[in-house]
Image 1 (cartoon, rainbow, N blue to C red):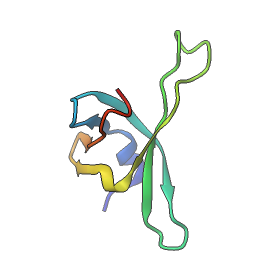
Image 2 (cartoon, one colour):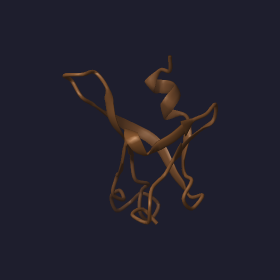
Image 3 (cartoon, helix red, strand yellow):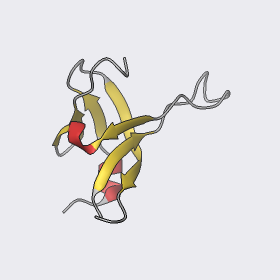
Length: 81
């Protein structure tokens, strides 16, 4: 079993291009089934965080390849380059 707080500490990396996407800021849970539908990566601040935040990245659960000790590997094609 993994706690949400433990997931939030892991780096999320796209295996398609090796790019670090950030950390989990939120999760999307189906209230009917209790299953996690997606993880949400909160965008980093723009220009030293002064002018809002970049868009968030929503990663469907089916795109998660592996959850390791330090990193979550996801497979995203071209959308978030």
